[in-house]
Image (cartoon, rainbow, N blue to C red; front, side, top):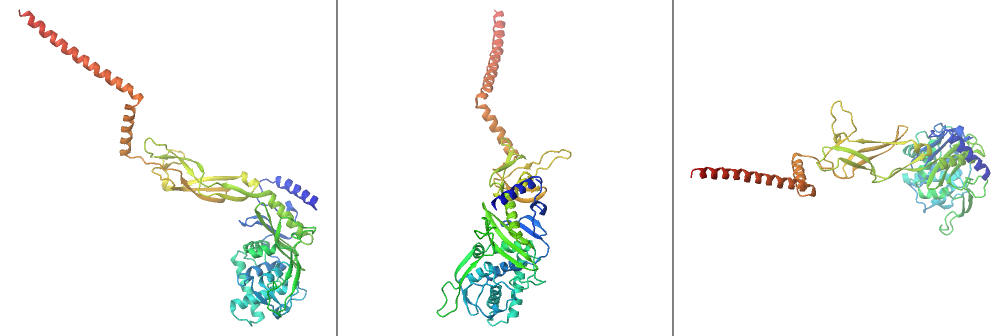
Length: 465
C-alpha cells in the first residue's frame, strides 16, 4: 500500500510540474474514479480541486452530518433522551445503530450513532426531539415533525451557502428529491467542523460503552454499544488507513453508489474532500489522492508581514532642510493558501488616496508623488496583491513618520538658521577672515586719505614764511 502511495505521489509531481501555471487540477491529473469530487482548504474555503462539483448528486448517509450539526444547536450533549416508537419508522433496508424503544441515551452518544454507526433510526429520533424542543409540543405528529425538521435542515444549508441542496429526510435514504452537490457537501462539512464535539466524534474510529454513560435512572433501559466507524481512512489496520485523516462520514445507496465526505490535517493544514458515485475501492483511493495533492502542492505562504517598510514615495512641498522621501509601512500580517506556482506569480500594487497625490504639470510625466504635510501613521491608501490579475488580498498602508510642510515662514527661518550655522562654523571662518580683511582695507584707505590731506595742508603753510 505504501509503495502504491509513493508511486502515486511521483506521478502527481510529474503531472503538476508539467503544468506549472495551473491553479486548479482537473480529473486528468489525478485520475479519480468519482463522478463528482471536490477538495477545499478548511480555513479559507478555497477550492483546490473540483470535478463536476456543482452537479446534482445523491448524498446517501453523508446527509447525517447536517442532521448532527443542526441537532447540537438545540439539544445539550449531556442531556438524556428516551427513544420513542419513531425509531421503528425507518425505511426497509436502512442502516441502523440497533436502538430499542424506551431506551435512554445521551445526546452525545446519539451524535456518535449518527456519525460512527450511521443509524437511520437515530436520525429520525434526533429530528423528532429537536422539533419537540423548538415547538414545545411533546406529542407532535411524526409527519409534522419530519416536515418541520426538513425545513430547518434546508434553511441551515442555505445559510452556509449550500444553495443547491434539498433534503427530504434526516438520514439520506434514497429519494429522487433528496440531493446536494460535492461543493455543497464540502460547505456542510466545513460548517460542522466548527463544532468541537462533532470534530471530535468524527475522528473516533470506535465507540465502546454505555449509551447513557451509566447515568440513567434505576430501572431505565440502556444498552452497551460497540461501534466501529465505516470510514476506513481513520480505522488503523484497514487496507485504506490514511494517517492524516480526521473524519467524516460515509454513505451508500444503490442510486448514490459509494460516497465519502472526509477531512484530513497535516502540518497545520486542514483539508476537506468529498467524492460521490465512486464505487469501491474508489472512494478511499480518490480521497487519498485528493489529500496528497493538496498537502504536497499547496501551503500557507506569507503574503505580507505586519508593520514593515513596503517602499518609499517622494513628497512635494517638504519643509526646507528635511528629506522628501517617505517610507510606506504595512498594516497587518497576512498568509494565503497558495500553490507553489502561484507564489511565483504573486504581484502587488500600491494605490495612494487621490487627495494626497501632488498635482502634476500638464504634459509632464513623472512617478506619483504625495503632497506635504503628512502625519506619522496617517493612512496613505492601500496595497493590493494579485495573482494573474485576480485580487487575493488588500490592506491599508501608512506613513512611517511625519513629513512637515513648507511655508514662507519656515523658509525664512531655515535660511536664517542656515546663515547662522555657516557664520559660526569652521567654514564660516572664511567669511570672518574676509570681513576682517575688508575692515582693514577700509581702515588703511581711510588712513591713507587722511594722511594725504594733512600732508598737503602743511606744505602750503610752509610756503607763506
